[in-house]
Image (cartoon, rainbow, N blue to C red):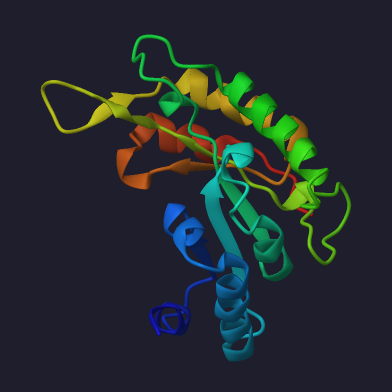
Length: 195
């Protein structure tokens, strides 16, 4: 009912944020199938997407292939700034994207196929994967505020540069309310090549 209300509001599309709660239910594949079948029956032309874990190997119970049957885009949460607890040394955006890319190749061997051309049943094209980076660390809170450590614009630029090598349609940032004017200006100037 909530999803239908959101779709009726006139949005351009609907992105599902599906995380650990989906892995904890009895049959995540059946639940996902029922959910998206209901949405597709209600509004067959609505652009659908999902965001979830980028560390796919750690979440093999998550029904990635079932989501891929119904969604137009996969937006993995590639939050390189929160991969370790050392707030002085984040892993690099390049490391994050390369690890994610390698994990996609590994889970193909488990029957979850991500192909380079076109969307087919049970798989989604690399062209339809739009990684989400972060402009602020949620783990590294600043003492003088409730905010996290802001990420340097150079790292956001690096995230875009390395992600587009594998995922050319674009990238996203979490979250809009954490972005400053410099982040917005840079984000607006980055070119994408949507298919």
